[in-house]
Image (cartoon, rainbow, N blue to C red; front, side):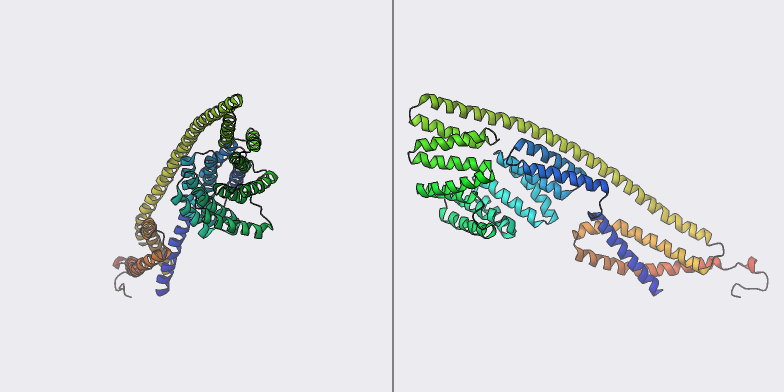
Length: 455
């Protein structure tokens, strides 16, 4: 009897633990179709990343498809990556509220997945968004959170971002400190300065300190790296920076030269904000020179770029609304599927709940016939296991909710429940066996005169 009770306890704990594993899902066992879907979603994210700094509209189109596919396939990691890339696109376009909203969605997913590498990327992106939104405290807060968990692959970048935050808010000594850390780490990894944004920010610092020759030197270094690596967005920023220095040095020809280079690059890219900076600078220079034809030319160009930015913003807002509607329809479909699954589960639970008492009734009926003791023991054990496992199915969701999925608390609760159920199981088993044994005893009519049931 002791072995039977121990066996029942082990079955109860095993089935409850199995239910817990099934509730969390097993991503290691994917069907062929799910693997193919996952591969397609990864490729969409890769394409979105490829076009991130080349053509934002194409990048957004890829990432929106990836996002819808990831949600449908229930691939949370790929969904979080898609939100991260979507936020990057909005940041490049200067739509900081939308960028922040997308990064927060990504952050929530990766917090639930406890993915530190992805969280570091989200913190880094949010630091850049808050920096460009002129929110110093939040920019530093998320930059420090990124630095605390950053892997070696993004240390150069996060040190550079921290330096750029301090530079933007005129804390130039702190900016130099972090840029030096970034440069030292960059050299240790690549053997030389490889990341052009480091000398670009150094150029901004020395420009603010009115050390124009040193600023020009750093801008030239950054521009050379950007030209070699074809990083067009940063290259345009470098051209605008060095043009600004030459303007303040009263070398207007050089300023015009680099501003026009920025404009020419901008014609083949979607980075209209940098084109607006360059056209505004050219308009200012020609106004000082009293060259009114060129002044009007670049003033008109600035107005055209502003109109284009406005129209693009409206078109992208409309596209965003369409995308949100697609997401809403997908959520409705997911809710409908979830409700249908819950309905089927409830029907199954009702079926199980109805089957158990029917099973005991059938057991009592067939016990009227003569059966071998082993058959009776087996049917009693089977009935009790069904009964107690049904109880475990009912209480398991409540246990997970109450313990907040804590393994320690869940184990303690399971042990407590088992300590109650095992003695109950023992008593019920004895009672059932005794009741069934009585039904197996021959009646007086069956034994005949002169015989007793005891004989």
